[in-house]
Length: 465
Ligand code: 5GP
Ligand code: SF4
Ligand code: MG
Image (tube, rainbow, N blue to C red; front, side, top):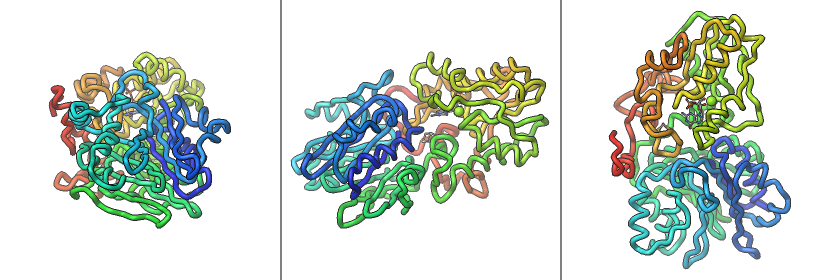
């Protein structure tokens, strides 16, 4: 999901809508905005679909006045499986003794089922099926005096990954879990402050990047400025390495590194680790593009746009049903026949999950008359599900969970298939010596099976790690 918040700008919701639009790649199912104005109090709107189709309408934006606003774009990973219900769309709002508060959450709470059971037993009435709603109920039960203190209280009981943007009548609040699994950055524009999942959404409103909110940090922003505190027991950070590979936008800066440059560097590593004689290097657009550029530069094999993407389709993976996903590849991607015919083609994509995309693309490329198809994948085999906010399917559906690299190659019926190594990926994100087992700096559980936080709800349901 994507989260964004603004304080201190006239009609803050307009800026939030723009920010969410720049974060649309993080969630396309639905979006919501909450705002507060001194005279009108809290207002909100939650809608299915793209930000641009909902939150640019003047009639709607006029209902969202005030200098303080937060928003969320949704990509369902927990809670309602199947179609999102409007009641699952964030931000969530709660009315407390000391006033109202709204929260928007990116990540996934790994003990949400247990918390929910306990809260319901003690009288909480849940409105949604979302894991994030637990935070509001935990806040309601806290005995602390202020809303930020109640949030701290609530979040100390929550396990897993959370980047949160929240607001009260007068404060904008940002929090990251102690491992810092999901991103969150602080920006400034004029007299206003901004919180955003990624820096690309600061650019769209002309805000300047100030710094990242640190793992385990809570920032409380008011007219008095930014206050910072560290309410959790400190732990070694474990940022999601897959944000670099796929999830974030290539024009964002994470940990002082350009996401584009990291992806290009993964392609360089891949060319060194898995060279092959071929005529052209083609990306599977858009997610494979920077790595394909890196592969081409390192190997000297010309880069070519052998697959053209229809710009008006969303990310296929994010469409929730299998059937739509199957069609999606064809709706979104088409082969550039004139370029492919008779060629030995290296196809570069960011990941293989179920293998749906790779299988369809291989068929399309062979139909167009390619002489050979070689897949190069800019991440290690995805063999484990993510429980921290990326919607990977159950383990059985992951191609790499049941097959070796060679078996996958045969299954996909391609001439060769190679994945970048975990060490290669670590080198690309800037770890000179690869993945140092003694001090890992990232979460890489979907590749390694080493989960930095035990996914306790899943373990209770019989998941074995
Ligand atoms: P598959 O078709 O193998 O199931 O999925 C792989 C494709 O899904 C890749 O092209 C990748 O760009 C895309 N993708 C979109 N969202 C995600 C995600 O959340 N995780 C992973 N691993 N791949 C994703
Ligand atoms: Fe990121 Fe993978 Fe860890 Fe999930 S399991 S947080 S996708 S690295
Ligand atoms: Mg892709």
